[in-house]
Each structure stands twice: as C-alpha cells, then as structure tokens.
Length: 136
Image (cartoon, rainbow, N blue to C red):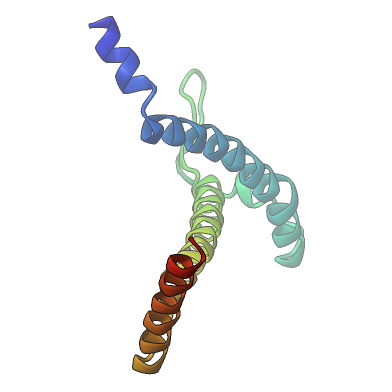
C-alpha cells in the first residue's frame, strides 16, 4: 500500500495539482487583501465615505442578553467582488495559456518536397553511389 501511495503521489499530475493549489491559495490571499485593503475603501469613499463591509440589514435589535440578528450584505458584496476578481484573473491566465498552445498547434508542418526535388535527390544519391564505387 505504501508503494502504491508513493507511485500515486509522485505522478506528474498530482505534483502539478499540488503546486497549483498552493499558488492558488497564495493568490487568493493577495486578491482578498487587494479587495479588503484597496478596492473596498476606495469604493466606500466614492459612494460617500461608507464602510461597505459594515452594511447590514438588522432583523432584530440587540436587547439585554439577546444579540443583534442581522444580514451582513456588505461582507457578502465584498466576497462576491473577491470571487469575481479571482475568477477573471484565472480566466485571463487560462486564455493566455490556450493562445500559446493554439499557436504551437498551428505551426505548419515542413513542406513536402516537390517531384523535382525528389528526383534530384535520387539522382544525387545515385551519383554518390557511383563515385564511391569508382574510388574503391
């Protein structure tokens, strides 16, 4: 079982996927920071100095020992924006990769030699054979 696991873990696809997950996690943190620390404050400033993450719809006010019950749609909007930026970034990267792959696939094959070139090649090879026969 250990050998089978080792074989599975060392396959190229698994290692590529692991690297992708690690990089994706780090990229997600960068985008989250960009949204939280750059975009949302600017958007709040544009919309009238509002902290969008604090936007909420209070369903029940807090009283005594009961906590406030609210729908925090500002945090939801922030997470949606976070997702859209990550999804768009991944779309752009995949699009670039597909373009490079498509260009490699489109590379024209080497042109076939014309009939004249084939005949000339055969004549050259025959002359070489005759010269080798005379010099020996």
